[in-house]
Amino acid sequence: MTLHELLEIQRLDLEVRQLRHRRANLPQRSSSETVANEMTARQAKLDELTFERDDRLGDQQRLEAEVQVVRMRAEGDEARLYGGEVNGIKELEALQHEIAGLRERQSELENRVLTLMEQVEELNGPIEGLAEDQMASEALLERFAAEIATAEADIDRELATVLEQRKVQAELVDPALLSEYQRLEPSFGSATIVQFDGTGCVGCPSQMPAVEVDRIRRRAGDDPTNCQECGRIVLH
Ligand SMILES: [Zn+2]
Image (tube, rainbow, N blue to C red; front, side, top):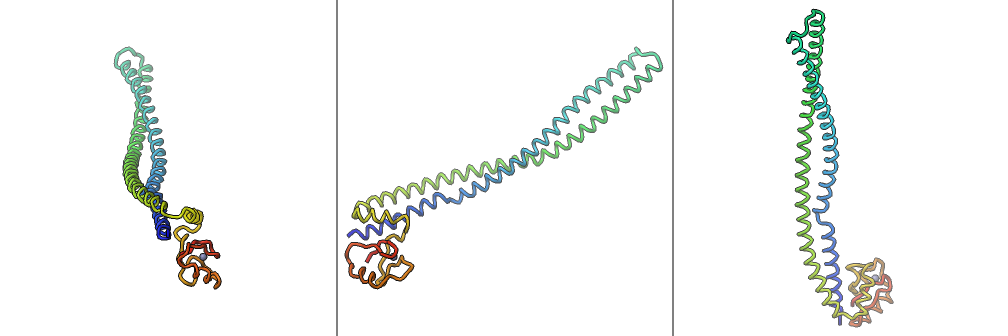
């Protein structure tokens, strides 16, 4: 008789399903997904702040170049003022006036440069913090990936063992019965083969008709039969 082997196959199939479920639902998978989502959101914030910082930095550099031009013009004018080339009082006054204007413009530009430098500095703090967080998350993802790979390898080894055991058992079972079990298994899972408890099929939600109970009772020791209510294989 091959009933014990068939039950063993049902048990091994359950084990296979559980192992595959465990493999597909490793906790590190959902943790990785959470971390990856956090990284996406953080990267958007990081890109936004970096864009803003670079924008300010661009303004700062443009104004610094402008300061340089104004300063050189002022210095050129001062050289002319003290070089004795300009003699007329009006021309001297005009030159002094221009120098004063240039120095004022330079000072105003320098103040704007300072403000921008402060803003750049203020943005650099959070940018560095976010970049560090991204690196920490990256390391965490790598750790999860390594843990997943290890767990998968462990489960795959277990699966290979169980599938090998199933293969051995399958060779001991009547092929017709095995194929009947395999036909029903997708619908009934680990309750494809059920015990007859003396009054009915334990898989059935409804009461087994007396005539059916009687039919199964009389088959005790024979090949298993299908429950006529639900179709499960009933062992007696
Ligand atoms: Zn049934």
